[in-house]
Image: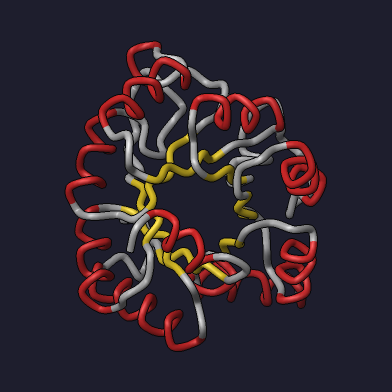
Length: 228
């Protein structure tokens, strides 16, 4: 698929995030590939996944566009979603159709701004689709100006300056749809089919749901908390 076909493939549909960290019970690339397979059978139009090994396993199992990330913690930065060129290189090599990067105002490793980082990335990979994981409108506007192909609401509520934002952040989704020209990806805090439908009805290109579908520990906790 070329980039136009990839964007058309995910338009108006559900992207399922299949991720598990080392501290979680389902941390295993085989399990994540099965999660992706289940999402595919359920009608998902794409998969969001973390780490090269998981993405490889998922790509062997399902033929869907993958939004790839690498979560990597560096001691000099709070940015952990695809924070440096090293992670971008690895995601390009594994064949991700879309690569998501943290596009917040926070400084990256070695004190780089997002603008400095992404200019280097776009210069090196002019034909790769990139998704900007943002937390507020100014970040999305800048990401579009810098050449990001998709703008996501992923980080809303997760930066110090957006902490406490009600999720899903429909206000940010709506502003992106109305004021930007790039396809918008709704992501963050979507727990129910009704919330997903509301996001799609706002005019976003597609939406990502993760925890509510692929993290049974968190789903269980939500039910348990309801009866405490």
